[in-house]
Image (cartoon, rainbow, N blue to C red; front, side, top):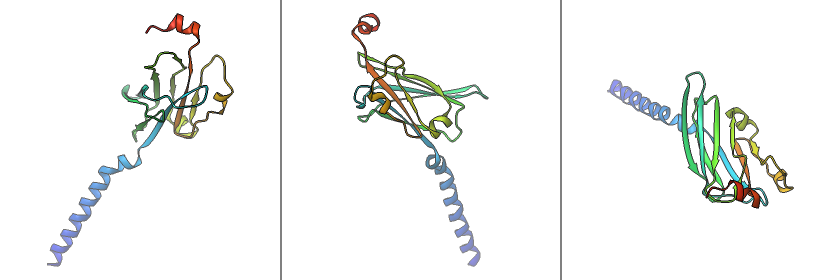
Amino acid sequence: MAKQRMLLQTGRCLMLASVLLCMAPRCFAEYMTLKVVHEGDGTPVSEQYITMQLQYENSGEQRQISQRTDSAGEARFRVPLRRPDSVRIEVHFNERGFRCSCRVQTEPETVFRTGLVIAPRTRKSENSSLIEARPGQIVFVARPSSLLQKILFDDH
């Protein structure tokens, strides 16, 4: 009887351990938050398509994941426990009239340690210098296209 009880307890412990091991990657994975904001006032730009490509240089493996920004202008991407060597991120605007340096390739460690702000290269508004990124976050700052840019570059 004591032997059966001990076997039953051992079985329960093994079952619990296997459940915890299966759930561990979900519990300990990190998330990278990508945010798109308007340069002028820092308001979120929602419903924009973002792609993230995870690149593993040793194996040559690449995985691509995509999402749309939510009403807060954010998209959260789960970064696997086996961290990629680099990530390539691009924002694809579905609205006419936005311009941005909306492409970046970086190491995940940089993003998780300090965060990144990707702002337009041309002119800098007073408000864009107030935009900051938290650790684990990349903020893309989008600005409206000038009339000349709309005429020359918009293909809509």
